[in-house]
Length: 70
Image (cartoon, rainbow, N blue to C red; front, side):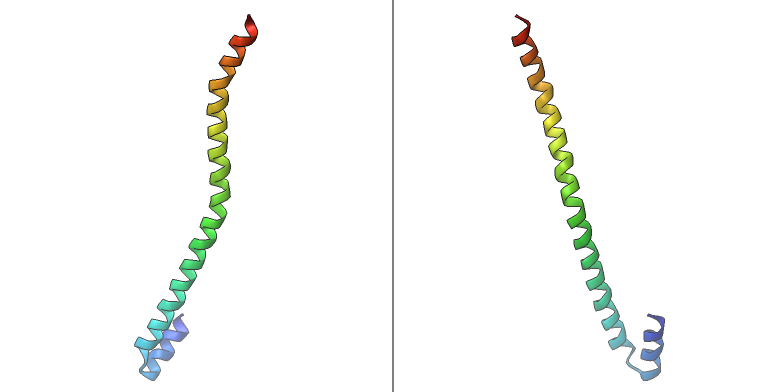
């Protein structure tokens, strides 16, 4: 990045070089965000499934216990 800015200053095209750098870093950030959300999504599905399963079991287990005790 420093070399690109230095070459932009020496050639007098600093604005064009900075625009290219900003485009490059915008693409890099978009790729990083997409990768992060792709990795987080399965983890969230497993967590939500575990929470819902725990709630369902905590509601159904007393019912089954009452029906088997008589």
